[in-house]
Length: 148
Image 1 (cartoon, one colour):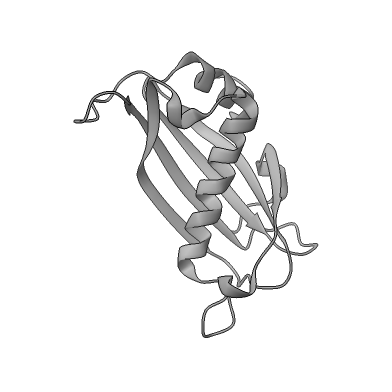
Image 2 (cartoon, helix red, strand yellow):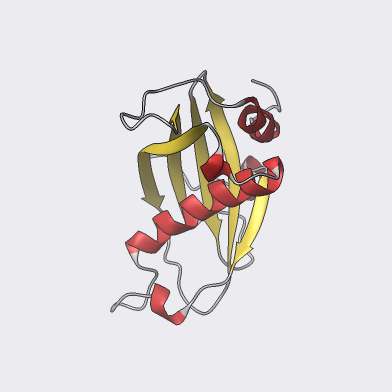
């Protein structure tokens, strides 16, 4: 198993406030909340980097795959820093990694994999289509090494 990723592996950062309700009955962050954090890190970056409502583009990213590797517990009340990096940009898909950090340590408490596949927003069958140029431009700086 790969060791916990380090802060230096990520490019874009966002701090998220934890809430009392984020913890489960065992006193640590509920598993579903990790996935909400991944979704927020990716989509908040896209909104800010593009300056548009990405839900209204002719092609939209739908989640085709997610996963999470847990290294240590997270929980309320400390904030969580989300680090974002892109591993691959294809014609119609993007593979993101999101590191979750809480406190001063250099190692991620968890890391998510999040894959967007772009589909035609006007087609009810959601036909896979090339991603919009505005999205490609927004994620290119997140690629390791800064290029596609």
